[in-house]
Image 1 (tube, rainbow, N blue to C red):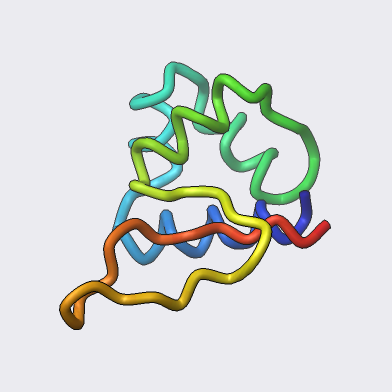
Image 2: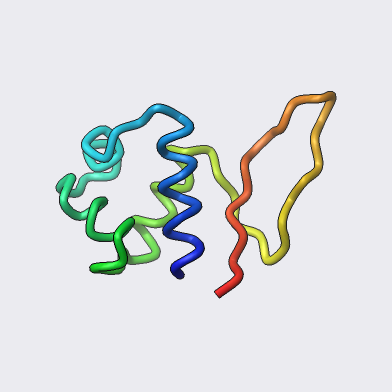
Length: 81
């Protein structure tokens, strides 16, 4: 889960979405996002799914490096833990 936390935080920052904005979009407090990204708490699968949708991410067991027409489609979080 540690790697997933880091990847989600990185994709959130890349998308220029604040913790507060992400929290509001999935119905939690900003501190909940901060605690999750810093490994202080876990999120339920329903909240993780919402985060993935907001950030346009998919979950894969292997890194996804495929590009379509020179543009990446969905970004992929790799489950390596």
